[in-house]
Image (cartoon, rainbow, N blue to C red; front, side, top):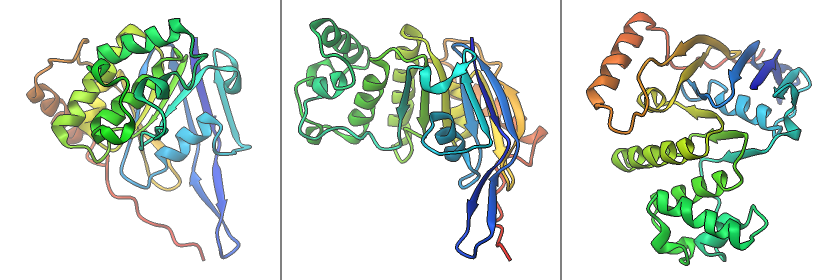
Length: 253
């Protein structure tokens, strides 16, 4: 029971008429219920890989399977960088929008809201919520369908560090109760080490997997000392100093 990703290459046709290869050979298999982070510097192709997995980015040279079936037969949830809530719907209605909206589903939504501390704003509209609260609602909406596969594209980017860490803990709380296979995009190494079972480091142009790294920190991690994560990060970067180097832009002839 796993996700299989094989992207032979991904090319774009530039304005000068030349093909520009942005992703080289990226291949990995993620076991069921694994939390996988794809990490690397901005512009290395992480989001493109995620969108190919989701089927949002066409790529004839890619094979994406979940449990040995086509990914389009899988219950997939996608959490974008922006919450993308419907402004005319309440918090509760935004969450049940992606379900059949039965009383049982609404109660399930309220249970998730209680887990992340938002049950008291279930009838508020998004414009009454802070940015962090909106991100938590987006998490709840993604998990309400109990997805087999969760794809997350830097969902906590631009948040205050303390707030982002609190929402990461919310994510782990929900995931522990509704486990799914997660692929999470980030350029924050501390975030990847805190969340993931495994980190795929992406770099170069065309993008390739530079390192497939298993995170040895024990779970649960909600109260793991920050110093322990920092120490692991320092060790990792000292052993692999090439990670997270800025991407050099290639100019086509």
